[in-house]
Image (cartoon, rainbow, N blue to C red):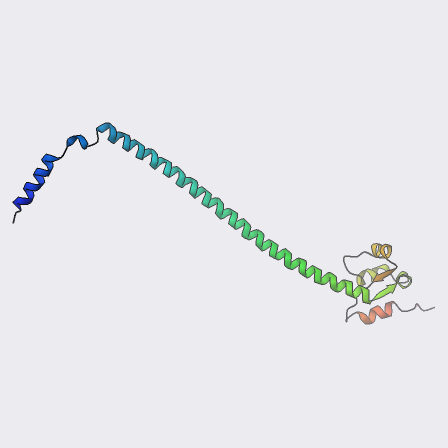
Amino acid sequence: MTYPHLRARVSSNAARADVSELPSEEQLKAHFNAAMVHMKESEALEAKLQANAARLAEVIAQIEALSKERAKLHCATRLLGDTKAQQDLAAREQLVPIGKIVRTSSRRLHRLCSPDLSIASAMASTRYFPVCHTSTVSASIHGMFSMPRA
């Protein structure tokens, strides 16, 4: 089946179309060049965007690493603070007069004191010297600081 009335309408519309409304070749070239410039600019912006995304990923990774390090330092500081508080409490509870320390050997005394205090600094800073007691060595400590035999 053919539709002769449709063909006649299409041909009449084509005959009525104004050819002057079509863009010229120079206009088409100008539009094409503008589209190419726009496409190149778009590609350059996309490349910048990808570079920025990669840099952002690096910064995020650094932030996460620093956050983990900060958490570790926070835990270590908290533990150190707890340990220091326990040492201070033990030092306040158990003070030994300096006269008794002088009678003991420095090697034995060094084993008893906390590792962050030296004998000289402890003697210079106070009249009393803190000794760290533990349940396993408390008997030997008490024996060590008893009066020397004549």
